[in-house]
Amino acid sequence: MTTLDPTLPLRIRPLASADYPHWLPLWDGYLYARQRSLNEAITLLTFERLCIGERLAGLVAEAPDGTLLGLAHLAFHPSTWSEQGCGYLEDLYVSEAARRRGIARQLVEAACQLADEKPCHCLYWTTDETNTAARALYDQLGERTSLLTYRRW
View 1 (cartoon, rainbow, N blue to C red):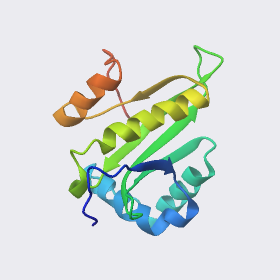
View 2: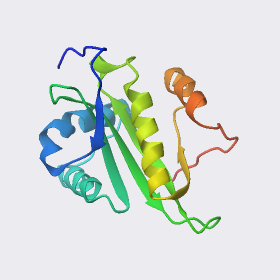
View 3: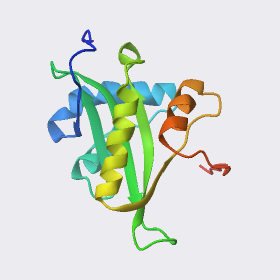
């Protein structure tokens, strides 16, 4: 892992097909943190869809030396409430060694900008109720709703 100089700017950019070997450790770290596992075929399909950038889009945080430090994955879908669609910030992850340096904020802000450019009626995301660090950031960047998320696998 690179030593990140906080005075050097990060580059937030779209995920590119050449990023796979550098994106994969971030993706694996994210899945581990979420206590999930995916087979290799699904991981590769996900990466390919993110690179195409139509209904899914990937963003990465790149250090000046080219090291990828974080990722954000968005899903875009139609809305029943607007002519414009909605964006869902489905995955957000910063490598453990690069945390507490504003990278997650930059990724969320870039996701907001991408959703605005689509254009999307709204961008929404979720987090674990107990993730106080993420919630503190998200309270600054968006409006917390009273809605609960339910899931069926």
